[in-house]
Amino acid sequence: MNIAVLLNAHENSDTFKDTLESVTTHWTKQVMVVVDGKNWDQFRDASLPAMKLEGFHHGKPNAPFRNMCLGLMKAWDTWKNWADWVCYLEYDCLVGSDHILGHLSSSDKSTWMLGNDHKVNPGSIPFIDRFEGGATNLHYLLGCCLFFNGGFMARLSEENFFERFLTFTNFHTGDPRLKSPSGKEELVYDLSEWLYPSLAAKYGGAVEELACWEEAGWRGDGNRYPMRFMPELHEHWHEGACVMHPLKDFSSGTRSYHRFRRKLTTLG
Image 1 (cartoon, helix red, strand yellow):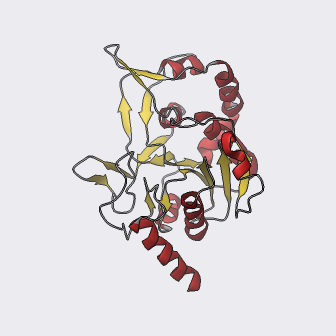
Image 2 (cartoon, rainbow, N blue to C red):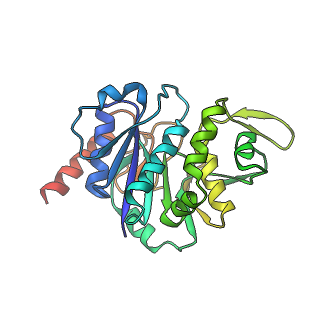
């Protein structure tokens, strides 16, 4: 089972490099870093154990959905005949083990996306409907760590999705909004969290949940996949975790613990 990783970064920080090291230690050496064009100078001449891709200038707190699409397009061009799965990962995630590799290997072929916090929403995102040319049933997955089946990547390519979306977003630059059945609207922080799971379901694939944070605790396999939007992970060191989020502080106890474990893995 082959996996490639698309790692999103906006600056060449210690936290980013710690996450990159965790990926190459536990998952794969096939990594592409897609960089916010605003800070490309920090990466242009940097020596990294990964391919580098200059993304569009983003420089905003909301998620860079155009850079994600660009990265996925380049990932398909690079690994389409090799990768069974492509993982999109944010810099403030941390990989702690290779457990997901076995999970992906044994997943049903109909599973096209995996991630945390899966939900179906009865509302609409007009931005997506305009792009798709009609109403789209909404599925959601937390955007910090998303696993794309190779079959889904192939279907996106067959639909000419990557080029169409980048062209569309050249001319449709407003902030997307989620509209409830009652007409109430709210800002969409990360369009990709809605776009890709919705397309996976629309094209006939299954969307699978690893875990979900429910304030009082975790649903699903929260011990191995403690990923949530907020707050920062701080309860303990998440010794048995496979992927964690958010961990923005390089010096946090959790990152320090897993760095030490990686050193033992390397020495072993």
